[in-house]
Image (cartoon, rainbow, N blue to C red; front, top):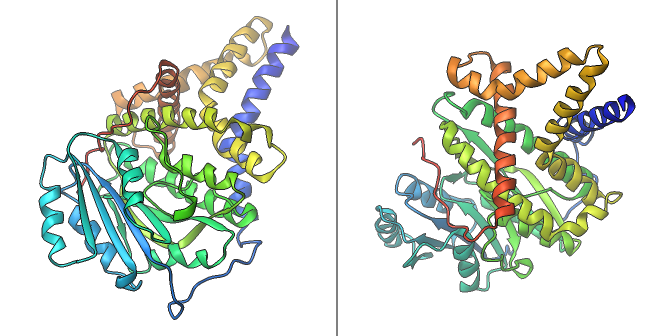
Length: 388
C-alpha cells in the first residue's frame, strides 16, 4: 500500500508542477520568436473591413472612454463599424452611446429589451454585417491607437483564424486581489506568446480583446458561458492558426474585490468544464501540439483542485508509515487554510498573498465544477464592479 499511495502523491504533485511551473517556463523562455513566417498587411495595403462587437450591461463608467479609444486609431475609420449591444442596461450606458452616435456615424447601438447575456448579444451582433474581421472586446478594455491594426495585420495570411490581443492589466491600487491578478495575467500573456511562437496556436484567446475571421465564427450555444474559448477551439478544429500579437496592446482595469473576482472565477470555471466536455476529442490528441497545449495549459489546471485533494489524502494515508509525511501533510493542511488566514490577518508579504491566491482560485475551480455538474441554464452575467 505504501508504494500505491506514494505513487499517487508523486504523480499528482508532478502534474501540478507541470501545469504551473514546467510548461509555463518552457513557453516563456524557449520560444522567444515565432517559428513560422506569417504574411502581414501594411497600412498602405487595402486592409479588410472590421466590425468591433461590444456587449455592455450598465457600463456607464467606461463605455465613453472605450468607444473613443476605438475611433482614436491608426486604422482607416471608413473600414470600421462599431456595434454596441446593450443588455437591457438600466444606467446611462445607452444614453452615452446615443450621444456619441452624433459624432461617429459608424457607431450603432442595439438595445435588447430583456437580459440576454453576452453570448446571445455577440451571436446577434455578428449577423448585422458582412465584415471580413470581427473584433470581440469588452467595454472596460481600452484600445491604444495601434491596437486594431495590430490585431488585423496577420489576417493577410489565409492560415490565420484568430489573433489575440495583449491585454495589459492595470489598477489604481494593489489592495485586495489586484496585485496577484496583475502578476498572474502578465505571466499568462507570456505563456500565450510562447505558445503562439512554438505551435501557431494560443490555448484560449482572452475575450476582452481578440479578432476572428467572420467566416470562421460559429454561433455559440445559448447556455455556454465562456464564448472566447469555445470560438478558439472551433477555429483550431479547422486547422487555422490562433496567434498572439504582443504589439496589439490594450488596457483593462483589474478589480480589487476578492469576493467579486472569486465569483467571476467560479462562473468561468463552470464554463471551462462546458468546453472541456464539448471539445473532449482534443484530449486524445496529446502528441499533437494542440492536444499537448490543451492538457498542459488548461485541463491540468482545471483539475488541480482534485490533484491537490489527491496529494492531501495520499499523504494522510502515508502518515501511518512514518517518515517525513507528517510535515508534508501539515504543510498542505496549512495551505488549504491560507485564504482564511489571509482574510483574518491581511498578509503583507507578496509570497504569502500568492499562496493564498493559488488556493482561493482552486476553491473557485472546484465550486465551478460542482455548478457545472448541476447544470447551467443561463449565461446572463453581472459585471465585476469597476474601480474607475
